[in-house]
Length: 452
Image: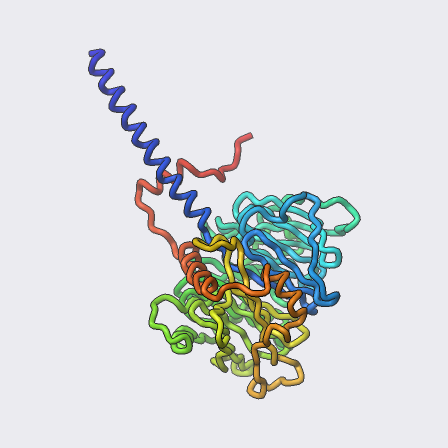
């Protein structure tokens, strides 16, 4: 009997050893995937074009356009501002605040006057999107479990020590990665998009720390993940007209009050024609940016070396492709777009971090398109043109700061574009796990709340 028990014990011990070995292999694979998770370069422009910020990997780079100099960030926490890839950067509507956040689970709020970090928030999960309320009193951020959090910033004094703020949940999408957060132009609504094709319009409450319980509408129509959101400001609609882009190669226009779809513009076929490619699933809309001086929408598409301009007819509330502005002679596929309410310029960046096989850990390339001045309200009369490097505001000094160097090997940017494409698919297209892999992920989760 004892021999049989000993044999059972040996069998059980052997099975445990096998499970441990398999777990170790799976864990090593998971860690390798995380360390190689490519992050696209991001760009954000001050509302009145005082400064421009670029994030690539864990690097946050800012250039002061008014004083024509690079900005030195002041973070009393010491060391680098972020320790992992930055996933969201944004200026507030009045330009006084700037927020950055990402995979290190830190949300940093910066004063744009001194570029000092005035508040730091620790998130429970990795952060996927950020937004600042129009009055500058609240910062919202979304995590990869589908929860939107809010932090209040009333009466922040720059002379005080940086605040360690605690966030509270505002609203949630059910276990779906939130890809974009935007406040409506009038500040009454916060709009959130996710990888499950949904756009939620929520009334931003007067007391956000108590939670947002009133859903205004859902904008449903995308057939793949929603990747980006933007607003068109109109005199007739103080809440603005919402536009969205996604993995279904479309840009859609919405009435956020009713949630109704106003129009759909299929950009995939045009992008494939312009890029002269037949590769499937390569026309994901990666970013959209409305041009404040006119009714144009700039669209960045994964396969397109340049941007597509859409014209919005406000009277009929329709979208149409106006033209494609190509980047001639460069492997430039924009990963992020930005504009300001003044200046008539569209800023673009391409690049990535953690690029396999590259000697450069974080690389980026900045380009600017001009021709969107208010003096030319008729979109058909405008001739957008890509500026040469010497014509870009800030010139060589700006490029050296935001890019990390004046020039980078062209071949590297093609590799970066492919890596970003793969990373976006890995992040936003739902994975199908085997039962064995699902059980392993449950056993090795490191984000469970500790019991007190």
